[in-house]
Length: 120
Image 1 (cartoon, rainbow, N blue to C red):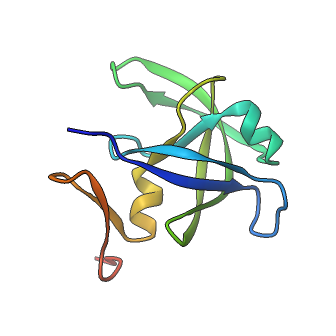
Image 2: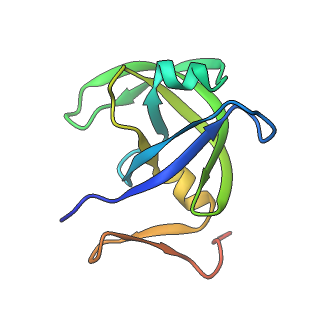
Image 3: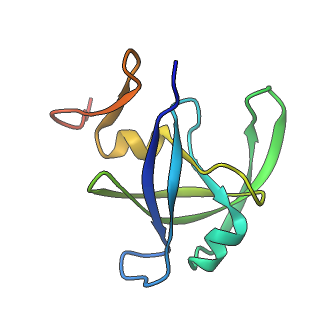
C-alpha cells in the first residue's frame, strides 16, 4: 500500500494572514492533525490545552494542541492541531477528513468525496 498526501493550509482563524501550508500525510488511524510546533506558532495557532495521545507503537505521550482552521481539497473545517516536534511529518487526521465528507479508498489510496456528509 502507498501513502496518501494532500496539501493542507492551517490558519488560526479564517481571516488570518499568517498560515502554515505543507503536504500532510493522510492518516486514518490518527484522530487529530499534527504539525511542527514552530510552524504552527508562526501561523498564529495558540496553545489551547494538553492531552495524552497513543502513538503508533502503543506508547502514550502528552502533547500540547491548538485550535485552527484546516483547509484542503477546496474545503474548510476547524479542529485540534497537535504541536508536534520539529521535523515531524505533518499528519491530517480522520476527524478533519470526515468533517468535510472525504474518505480514503483503501484499494487505490486516493481521497474520495462522499455525495453527502453522514448525520446518522
